[in-house]
Length: 344
Image: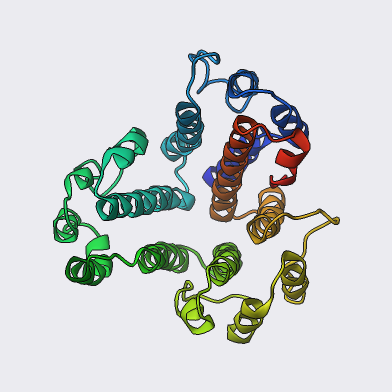
């Protein structure tokens, strides 16, 4: 292993060491207002820098969440400048995923006839890195204009047929747009893993990516079933990659009705979680399974790319935890209720 790879692993573990712990979450969830939550987060090692200039008494919830999101991106932007190992290629996948989110939000704004929400929530830190002119997407008044605006990006080929159809029918299939964007994201990442690594390093990284895909598909299965989607339509709407969850397993998951039964089914394929936490949703189950694997990888792996990817995913889960906590505080939920919704 090169000195650079060792440095990436050490830095990633140090960054994760500053992330929020169970006690931090308990104290956060006990706050009585968004202002108190902001003041608490500003005192933590994890968020002290990004929140140093805020006034907790006046900060808007949306602004607080945007700064928290920015802090995660800043970590990897600085990491990218420092990292000279093979793992640095994965910075572009952080960009790609954020870009996919913004394209979907922009498409929804075209469907709704208003770009105001899209522009208001657009993360400005992404503008200089994205391949798409994200700000220009707000100007699209119809789906063909949108297609023109992404013409010189990798997303044009995969989205254009859907945009042409939407222009004719007046309805965009946002679920299929999402599936195609994330299929492109994961396919690109897997191909990079195959090109860049060999042997056990390649297997370790592919395993992390494919486990993430399995959990994405579990959540998609359950969400679509909840909205009454037919089983055959669910299956074709999933990401087209399989690790432990083969087609027959997907068939069984589609038939299950509650989180406990889904957890029991996943355990048959090695997707277990330690202890006996009370899980509120399939999303929480999937993220808990993912988090345990990611933490093990961060702690034990000697593959800098796998460690880097695990750090990315862990900090994304932390970001969602903090957002959930802030929203729970805003709506006056008890600290125990909020804690029960987090992945800790």
